[in-house]
Image 1 (spheres, helix red, strand yellow):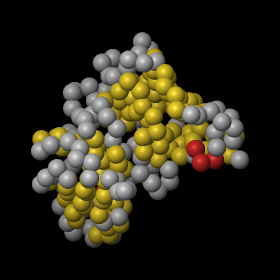
Image 2: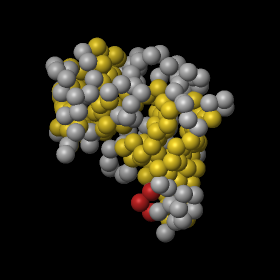
Image 3: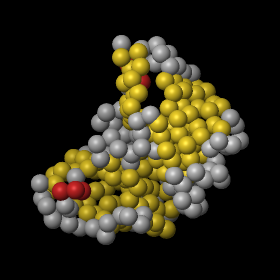
Image 4: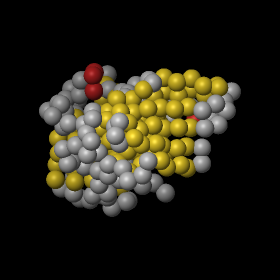
Length: 113
Length: 112
């Protein structure tokens, strides 16, 4: 089955700096890669996703890049702000053809003013 | 507008006393999921439904059961809660496994 590894587990940056979180996956057939943000005490919410027919997708300060050859995808946050502080989860579809995602272990991002 | 609703938001039960958590959706999505989440760990999938087709994860304890009586509602039954079952339980919906999952606010379960 699919395996998703996420690094780093914690990330601390100064406000205004960039943050990068990387995930690797095992199933070369995977074709959908979402990123979820979970603030403390709140539900996970999708912030960006990418499908395998593109290599990069941007939405304001957030971007996701996909390298299908290397089987990894990354979340890039530029000009970080304190409200970006949260736990971020990457995910990939389970390779068995079922309607489910395999989540990475999460990255706790702290943005310091 | 609430799209995925979970009730109750907080549930306290005693060791071994059955509980039922509920989830409803206004999105008319085919797939409904139940996750268990502890201490900012990744959500752990317990089971999911594609319409009425039930899919159990291999490592989901028999203590956990689920029902989906119609498209809008899904229930999580914990037959004999143990201390280790204390967690946040998240319900989510999606059109399919290749689309965004919309999470409910969660039910925090405390077992005394």
